[in-house]
Length: 473
Image (cartoon, rainbow, N blue to C red; front, side, top):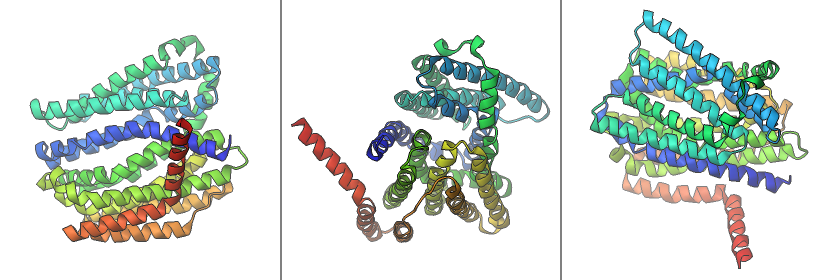
């Protein structure tokens, strides 16, 4: 497959999944006014922390077998017998893991009463099932089904949360209820579309295949824990040291900053597949380096767009008691850019099946984040949490960029990196000024930078559209 074909394949898959994630993300922003108007900062801060812990528990519960089923199905897409083996084995394993989780959780809750315990366990179980089925869909190359399921889950989540909070006057636990229902219905859709009931056969459960998949997935558990330590340690430390209310504010900052992370998350999904498919080809290093360069240009541009337009809508979207969240968004956005670039580098580890390296590098990143957080959180509050995240992601990017050269040669355009960082600094300064003139200057400056950063990509798109028009004529 030629370089252009590989890039087209990557772009096509990214667009399909991006559309689903963008729709879900866009619709979910309607929930921000609901959260900030109807929920107090303390209650929302607690549920946000709970959701962060659920996100931690699911990969541990699954022993990261979700990653294994995706990676192993890629190699067996045309082999019905092996597909059945992998899917039957993962479903059998998932059933055992959920049974153990319920038993252990009931014992813990017997001794330590957990607020909203039933809703939390329900959310963990339904999310675990949905996660496995999503990765089965990806592994089978059915990205359209993956996208549709994500939209179903997101839409139901948003609609049910809005109804439960506004019309039934429920507290923040309604977020967990809505999430669980969305997970269940989207899982049913995926199970039907991917013929999971047909492919599952208890006689096809393969112990050797299970061992092989566990060998791949188990080293990724420390990686999952480390990402939790990076992403959730901030919120845990904030909640325990300066309170749930401050965590509620920080959660709103993260929601806006994570717009960019949503884009990178979508790309990372398709990039891992593309990297795994093309890892052994001759022009691999050139292809991988080009992906890294384009990622820097695109993610920086997305962040600039967010910082340009956010001053116009922030107060209209966010209740007054949450508005201090505005100040931490640029720092978190910059951190997410380096996180996105680190994920591009990490895709090479996944493709080479060197999952221990993924875990090691992420653990080092987590330690940097926690140490800075603990030292400075009392003195600098939410600024410490934001800056520690930025420093940790910069460290992760630099470490992986150096380490990955043992396996894949990535090259980065340092001129582009410098232009992007200086531009983001200027845009951030104008973002804080927040006057009509600063917004207009930011808009003009930002558009110029975006065009300069992406001129080659823009030319390629225009050439593609022109060729399509000529062909149709």
